[in-house]
Image 1 (tube, rainbow, N blue to C red):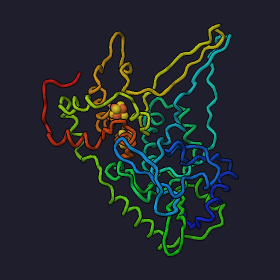
Image 2: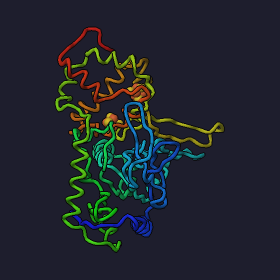
Image 3: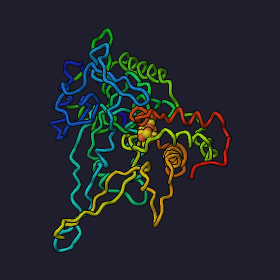
Amino acid sequence: MEGTSKILPAERFDVLFEVLKKQGFDIWGVHEKDDALTLAPIDGPADLPRGRIDDTGPGKMRLIDGSRDAYFDHTLPMQGLKRLVYPPQDKVFETGEDYMFTEPPVDAKPIAVIGARSCDLVALETLADVLENGPYPDHRFAERRQALCLVAVNCTRAAKTCFCTSMNSGPRAESGYDLALTELFNSDGHRFLIEAGGERGQAVLDAMSVDEATDKDRHAANIISSTVAASMTRSIPDDARETLKSSYDHPQWSDIGERCMDCANCTLVCPTCFCSTIEDRSSLDGSIAERWRRWDSCFIRDFSYIHGGVVRKETASRYRQWMTHKLTHWHDQFGRSGCVGCGRCIAWCPVGIDITAEIRAISKTGEAVVEAGVS
Ligand code: SF4
Ligand code: SF4
């Protein structure tokens, strides 16, 4: 459903929070904590990192003061929406002394996320393809996703690590949102263009006493999005999928293996990585047994352990597995890329390994194949 668009003056930004609270939502948004941007429960506009921007690069994220008093000139928080729908640890079964298994109820509280970026909306749809739309849907994921009200923010600047334009996932939110904000600073003042993306967003908009947006406001928002898109310097080449299929034994994998520390940061911050493991926990007296699903990572050596051996023994083979899944096999499995170009894996890698630079290094020598590949 195509909704209407309105204008909310920045000094009345709290009205949006109040309406969402009245409609029963807890509110989450980007919050500055420990010199980083995190996704956290917030109460109102004062909890947002107003006037702050991120200076982000390979292996680097610093918060600094911006040149204006904007609410959303920063880019992404460390985490995407994944943790809200697919928590790092989730108890999926439990049993008591009667040895009957029961499933704990899903904590699917209505949450409104203010400030979700376009790449993270696409990442949520990408995760839904894996966890919700296949033959074995995870109803815990689905219920949590349904409970989210997503208030997107169209980016007003790109980090140096962003490459969403080359993944068709930004910088403007095209779908998957309930409301989309664009922060405008011009001769008409500091205001938000608010667009409804569906019935839930329209209901929020209808409950706010705000003016209709004009064509001039919508044009100003379009200019911002095209300027941000044009400012991105990183990209994934169009032929990455085919390049990787013919580069299984490329020497670049060993080169990456020399630098990668197997820390798994990249998979933990990635909004689409979904690898998990199952842990059974029991009390010492045997009265309680629980089964937990918790995040795991293909960078962990034992992740590929099967009946007596580890399949991917070397760091190089684990990086290759991760990158080829993201950029190649995800297309084969789910008809889309597993990477949305958010750049988090570049920023939060302690040694600055950059997926866009690595694929270019592999593309440069094209079909080069060496015998001494990784195993
Ligand atoms: S692979 Fe990197 S850039 Fe792509 S979605 Fe994951 S964290 Fe973002
Ligand atoms: S690529 Fe970087 S973030 Fe990922 S496991 Fe290796 S060192 Fe850690």
